[in-house]
Length: 199
Image: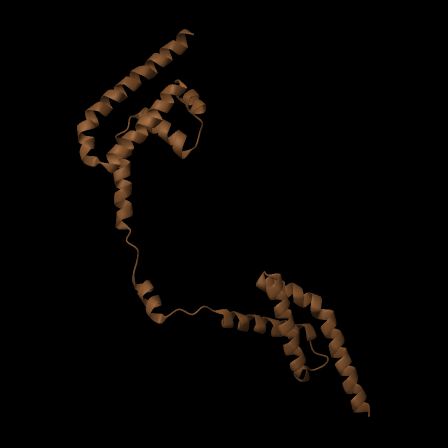
């Protein structure tokens, strides 16, 4: 009779400890899964496993450590069940091939060559307007020229880059034209500087 009573007390004690640890199990499950629904499922599976294995729990030992061990093992098992599978032929083929990178270097070299053919004013205006996203009035104030000059430089720089990069054969015939435009921009910049000094 005493053994039956002690078994009932140990079962009640087990259930009380289980109820007391549920909030901690939920927090730990949330930290593992980062998803409320998956965390609730994990807690439910943990409690079911603990109830099924309650005969293996020795009263007086660390109940929370036992429960957290069950939960961690259940989490790892669920990850193994959800692990995606890939046909081995595809995985081997993907691991043996690499994307060609030679073209990237060639494209960059062509761009830098074309960019170097722009006048200094066009390069500066293009970088400030397109790369840094500065407004035309700020670029004009920085360069000491009018806004129209900056707009013209950006437009001509874009057109020149497009011509040099998209149709390189035609670019040789128009290099002399580009040099004449650069000289005119230099004169325009000098004229703007002189006019601002006289004001």
